[in-house]
Length: 313
Image 1 (cartoon, rainbow, N blue to C red):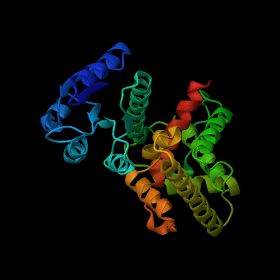
Image 2 (cartoon, rainbow, N blue to C red; image 1 turned 90 degrees about the vertical axis):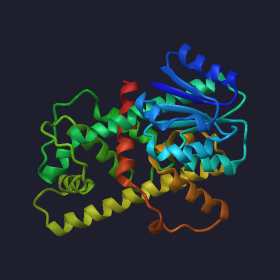
Image 3 (cartoon, helix red, strand yellow; image 1 turned 180 degrees about the vertical axis):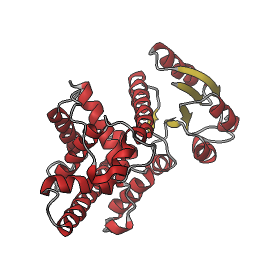
């Protein structure tokens, strides 16, 4: 990983660079003492993966810097500050930071956060590659023949990891969990098929395949359609319930591990923040007015579950 550190305190920059070097987390490619010195072209040229940036700095602070360069910077931001104002922290998250670390610097917290963000970067790169290995699933639709020879992971291990993660998201036992677990196992079996094209997957074809597997190909098309629609609705409700759970955790405590680990990973943080504001105000949200990316949720869930399953083999 390539790092860039922005802080007006030279001692803080030195401490962070030392942690990165001592723990073999990567390489500190550059530093700046205020946001105005941050050059987007340099960040992209040097392929910076993670920017560690202070909130309060002279000339241009951290939030304004992220607002300026964030849309064109493909890497991740970790904000470091002694400011504890929830409004500022929420604004920082809404602009796309991954974590917010409080000063004074705690070596173990910095190490833990950087490792988590590095894992997230690897996750996103894996998701970018998933289309190369899964898109053919969507092209052949319900006629897909699953690769039954893949036995690197036992199905029960993948399912157990799936149940654990769904419990972390606060939705285990809800209607839709079994649908998601079936999708996860389907994706894993399908991942070994050859000849995939690099096109985005279409979830509807997965739902169709699973419905036909459940009822058999001889059932009327109308019954398959009803099952597909019902399954899609159950999954969407699960995704929405996960959003509610994480937003509620964030309202209570921004530093909650589950909130920090999953909120911006599974959802656009602007959506999470909107739901948090609704919870704070006591207003009743409308599920139709909340934009939820079900495809992203399932992709992230799949790779997180697979990672957990492999780690615990």
